[in-house]
Structures are given as C-alpha cells and as structure tokens.
Image (cartoon, helix red, strand yellow):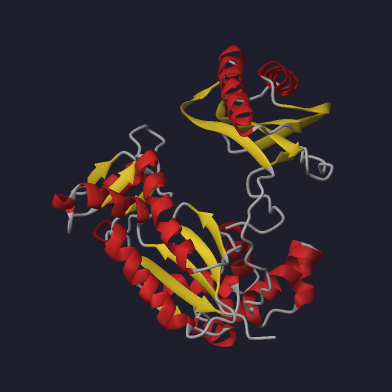
Length: 361
C-alpha cells in the first residue's frame, strides 16, 4: 500500500477575508467580524487584530477592549456560504477525494497521486487568483497531523511534516495544540504534572486511564503521540438537525421559553420538510445561567417531520424539566433519521467542568 498523504486545507481568516474582498479600503486595518448583542462573540478577526490578542470565540466586548481601534462588521453568512461553495468547487475540480469539514476547511486524500505537493501548490494559487481567498495547507500521513500542520505556517502556510517530527516540534507546547484536547482537559493534565505535550507523551497510560477513564485515557495517550488512522470520506451524512439560540439576557419565565421553543420547533420542522428528512428522536437542550447544560429526549413510534409532533414533544420535555434557574441557551433537535441505527440513550445532565466523551476541543 502506498504511504498515506493527507492534506488539510484551511482558508485564512475566512470571514474577515471575504469582508476585505467586499471592502478593500479596510485592508491593513484591524478587522473584527462579530455580532452586536451583549453576548456576541468574535466569529473571526484579521491578522492585524490578532496581534492585539483578539481571537475567534472571544466575547466581542473583550475584543473591543483589547483593540478599540478595530473596525467591527456583523457577519453575513449568506455571503460566506457563496464564497465557500466557489472555493471548494474549485478544489473538487482538481482533487477526487475531498471531505469538507466546515465552511472554511476540508481534508483531501492525495495518496497515490504523482507529485502531490506541486499539484496542491498550483491549486492553492488558482483558488487565490480566482476567489481572492488564501488557503493554508498541512500535508501529513494522517488527518490529525495535517490539521495541526496547516496552522503552523499561517497565514499562507504550506507545511509538509511527518508524525514523529510533528510530535517533537510540538513537545514544548500545551496539549491543547492537539485537536480533541480541550482547555479543561489540559488544566487537569497540568495538575497531574503534564503541562506540555512532551510531558503527556511520557505519561503512563494506566495513570491517564485512572483519571479520565479507560477509553479517554487511551485516546489521550494516542493523541499525544499524534496517532490517527481515520479516513477521508467524501460524503458526510447528517446524524441530526437542530435549532438553538443563546439569549442576550437570561430568561426565567417558562411561558416565554415555551413560546421561543415553539418558534424554533416550527423552523426546524420546515427545514426537515425541505430536505425530505424524518426522525424518531426529538430532544431539547437547556443551558442555565450557571452553565449547567441539560438534554431531554424522547423517541416516538414513527419517523416524523411535522410541526405539531416536534413542537408537542419538545414542549412536554421542557415542562417536565421545568428549568430551576434562568435559561441562557435553548435548543430543539431531531435525530435518528430513517436510515440511522437505533439511538443511544441521551445523557441526563452535564454539570460545569464535567469531562465528556470523546474529548472535545
């Protein structure tokens, strides 16, 4: 079998790049793409803004404090989707095995291709010329290492690296550099005496399993050495569809929550009907003001996508839970589609700080 060659393609500061194409007069200025509500977060920021410590998922208020001179633009998701379709359409014209992982990133399997690196460089140059979007690329024997590598040379990075070299290069950095190891897990590892990836690579598997559980401990050990054999798949089948919202101010009134849930259930039913998709499991998600997150689910007898059933079950679940504190986020979800296997039991609740499986970024 030929040695695997996997590429991770990541558009640099994608939303900000699209906005700069529309507003070239802002080039060179710090730019933040974020909403305007009190709980708005940064979608992305230009590299000029990142020099001030502004980053994705940071609260918009904190971003403005760090970089008060930045230009803030509300996100235009329709424009981003249109540019994304053009970018990945060009990529698929040249590469056969492409798995889109988000609006601004994708994996490509280049195994067996003759001279894959020159081919990829030419493709990235063509995308930049035709769309104005710059892609950074990581090339490696696996998806995991390729994703890490694509971030090492940003912006306009092109990094080809092997697993062992990448593990050694990152040994002095926080374990958070590895996708799948989040901040809470990294904090626990630091408490155990493993503050860097190099320390984690030398940690006994048994000790990790004792702290994080058998499967998660083994997964942490594998991830620390950057082992990964997951394939690049060309089709991504949706396992569920959902609709959720984070409120600008916490809501304690149960009647108001029900009204919002009915509206979201109606929108979700309409989306399922447009796709011709039906599911058997209807669930709600409630995040309280102390960040406790609770899910409740019910599986009905037949596959449905009608508004009455989805709303009816969702409202019953909300009433049965009766949130004991003001609610920060509310959502409704439909899963177990017609071609899916039977659903696994829903978790009852997730208190703040609880480790979930699998480990999340």
